[in-house]
Image 1 (tube, rainbow, N blue to C red):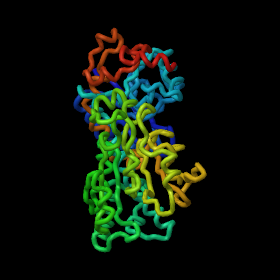
Image 2: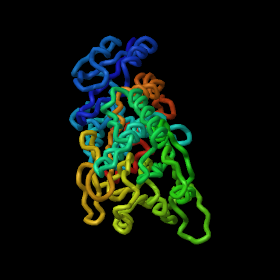
Image 3: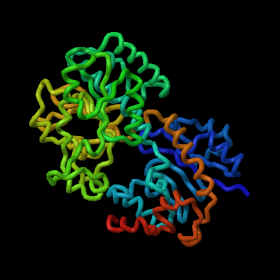
Image 4: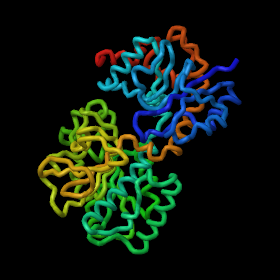
Length: 431
């Protein structure tokens, strides 16, 4: 007997065109697992209603299926009693703005599976968009640098780069970057800007995606310790890349003590930032790290106020992590693809939209994978596919310890019958 799943249309904003399950996998679910799909109609989704219908899905406004898949947060009035919902809930840190949504699910006795918590035995995420945030974020940061220099009257090959969403595909963007790379190899970058140095804080999926884009250009990787010497002896026909790990950015507060990664994670108060020594040597900084308030910041308002002048090298910060007043203290707000950057002026502690004016340009788009919606959805659906049949066919009516799910999924069940499961009871204090 066929079972069914539902796919909710995304409507958080006009840029959210992604899907959790692509038409290709809808067909596979039907043919291989006898799972039917019902999907809500959408005018903005990257895969059309017709593509889903051709793959065997029913396009209907009403989702009567017991299991509903989505991407972003779901409005509190959408939930139905006893159903199972699978999406990025953004509740596991006790995010205040999503507590009403979680309460609604609890009152209706819903089950919640959060993609963010689908991890392997080493707590590495298995279903994610991070790489695509990095891919789109790097394109947008290079675009921002090109436009920033143009506003200062300096033309570079990077001024030809477009924002990610202006390319028809990721493939088209990469082909364009290859052409720009050849111009850099042939003509070089303006001597007044060289050496162009791009720093990456972090080395996970987001950072790898961003590096994948930069590496299309002529790139030479250096270590953090080489940053000072490269300012004196360099080539204007390459872009220098440097990746910062935790041991590069902080040091123990106690003199003579060695860095210990696990200790830093567990007791960040025992460490202080040393990242400011690198900032004057960077042209672009890509922030790709996980951060919360216990950890030292990468760039503070005070550092910028004390050091900024007309010769300051750092022009653009691609804040992919987008923690408001977080690792980049002056990330004052989230930006969007149609208004992607602002300039932070440290002398007056103010931001102004656009890429002109005194200060540093910040790109802080919080839904970057939306700029490459087809490719990011295909990747996400590929990684999710193996987990869909067991989720859809699981019996959630039994006690939680008896629910038969792969361990990776069971760890991601935040609510069962409207109650927080043992691993997530700490969220009660935020409700």
